[in-house]
Structures are given as structure tokens and as C-alpha cells.
Figure 1 (spheres, protein in one colour):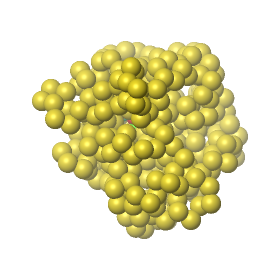
Figure 2 (cartoon, rainbow, N blue to C red):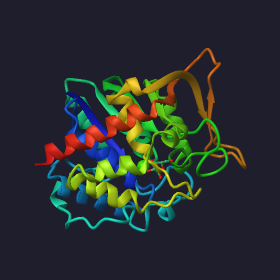
Figure 3 (cartoon, helix red, strand yellow):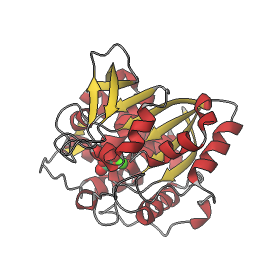
Length: 305
Ligand code: BDR
Ligand code: CA
């Protein structure tokens, strides 16, 4: 089983990505680090604990960053609702899963004491991974790879040139892309194409209580572009890890724009560069991915019992 740490800002699609990861046979989720992001940290932390209570899992939760490294925080509560998970009432959270300590320190200690290399999954702003790499550079040699949902090749969803997770903390993202680690990216385009049809959403609802929980939340999501299809961005990053056959990957050099007046937070992906620092999913097989997603929810349903 691959040791995995999840940095997340739940967020409805984060809930789906965590659910799949927690019950994936190939993964050993060591800890979850909720960060500020879609909504404030107080909500993303409670949402993570709520989900674990609902799923009957007991992975330690470490409190992440409550703001980006440099600029003020942004918010996506217009998409995910005020609390980040509008549409579903979770049972009262279990606070005892919270592991005390600074996220960077707790992650460092866990990674260094694990004999195997750890994979990092980043499905929110990358503030906590940037702090980890800066504060504890010795950790880099014990990290297998970083897999993120973030960035855009074409038009962004935060600004014309920027995607939400990267725009949330561009300085942190630049640190991650320049870490020297293998970085794999599920950009916005792949999330847009990995949509679920109403029929597939019904199939998810029919899976059982986990499927019904996801159905309730995804039915409540508000896409600012008014697109009625259900897009599930964050699980595409988990898909790169567990179902790579669904994706076409291409190497690129990625730089994050940190100075632009209109382009701050843009992920500049150069697919023609000789030097590359990341592999980008440039295409996804929509049907194959949807089948994998539904199968993963069925597996979570089984695992939860
Ligand atoms: C990303 O931003 C958030 O709103 C989603 O949870 C996802 O991580 C998509 O741009
Ligand atoms: Ca997210």
C-alpha cells in the first residue's frame, strides 16, 4: 500500500476525493491536513472530521494553514456553500481525531519515520506543502511524488488565466513546482471533461449511503458558468494515482506567475521546453474515468460497513 498524505479544503469535490482515497486498497492514508481554501479553515477542518465520522474511518487530522503565504485569502463559498459542503447534514464530528502540532512538523515526522517514500496529494491551495518543503528540506528525499489538482492550460475558473487552487496561493504553488520532486497535475481542463451525466449521478446515488451523500452535495453545487453537468475536479488527481490508464500525460515546465497585474496566479505551462518539472494530464477518457469513479464509490460503500 502506498503511504499517502492528503492536503485538502473540503469543498464538495474534496469530499469525494477523500472518500475514494480512504477506501482505496492501494493506499494507506497516513493523515489528512485540512487547509484554508474553498472556505475558511474552521469549516474545512470540521468538514474533514464530519466526513470521517460518517465514513467510520479514523485517520489522524492535522490542522493546516489558515491563510496563504503572502496575499489575503480568497473564497469559493458561492460554489460550495457557506460551510463548504452545502446539501448534506453530517453527524456531529469526532474532535479526538485531531493530532496536535504544526502541520509541517507533524507531516515531516511522519514521513521521515516511514520506511517507504510517501506520496502527497494536494487538492486545495498548496500552502502546507510549501511550508513543509521550506521548513524541512530533508523531507524531499522521502517523498515519492506530489499529485495535485490545480492549474489550467486554457481559460481559468478564478481569473481568465488562473485556476482556484493555484490562485489561492501562487507563491506556495511555485515552491511546490520548484521542489525538484516529480509533480503530476490534474488541471482544470481534465476536471471539466471528467464530468458525470445525470444517469451516472443516479448510479452513484444508488450505490448506498456514501453514494447518496455525494449525490446530495453534488446536486447542490453551483457552477459559476451555469454548466449543468457535474464536474468532479479533485477526484481526477486521485485518478492519476489509481487509474492512470484514464489519462494522457505530457511533460511540461510549469511556472506560476507571481508578478502579473492581470495574470497573478496563472500556471504557465510550457509543453515545448527541454527542461520539465511536471507531468500534466492533457486529456481524460471521460467514460472510463466515470466507470472508475463509480466503482470506487462502490468500494467505499463496502469498506464503510
Ligand atoms: C478546485 O477548486 C476548488 O473549488 C475545488 O475543490 C477544486 O480543488 C477546482 O479549481
Ligand atoms: Ca479542493
